[in-house]
Image (cartoon, rainbow, N blue to C red; front, side):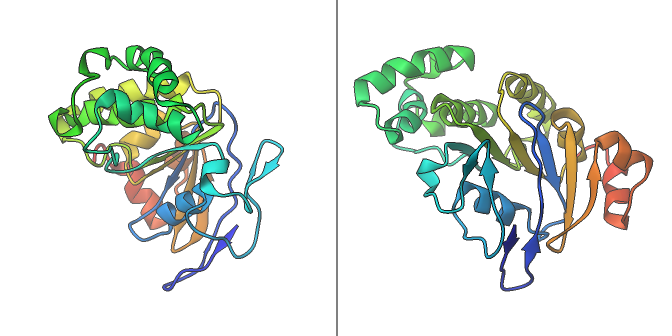
Length: 229
């Protein structure tokens, strides 16, 4: 797909396999989040196609695409409790308030949030807030999942723990997942495949091991040398 931007166009082809998370990496301003928003339906594409299974998504509204999105700063609703935040995705799919609340109970339990159900976002740690955002995205039973810099809002001290928890949850998700990140640790822990985007163009793709073995650009060479962000 090709997306027009004021600074430079972004053109990318992604083939994301179900159950095999793909990391989209690149320097700041490379176009990573632009691609994510186009897949989610928040930005129009000029040329190309976005297919999910046998469905073409380009002409569909965001809410009709059945894509779960976890944003960089989680975007939890501050006036809603944890339980109501998780139920929000179900309500957007047409479920009534009471059925939606009932349907969230397994998700609260799965993400170890049952004891936090009545709390508000300002009462949560960063790791807890991330689990709420992921539970909210998955409770609506999306066919694909998009994660935008999933560790960026977390303190460095807890990133390893939360990253391991996220890896466990992603292994249980059967659909395609795209993770936008600039963190080598995220790529190594979370992704089966990697696509490198620089100034709107793909400069390398493969597994993390193949990138480490033969970096194609100076950016990739710097990325594979990093231990932590």
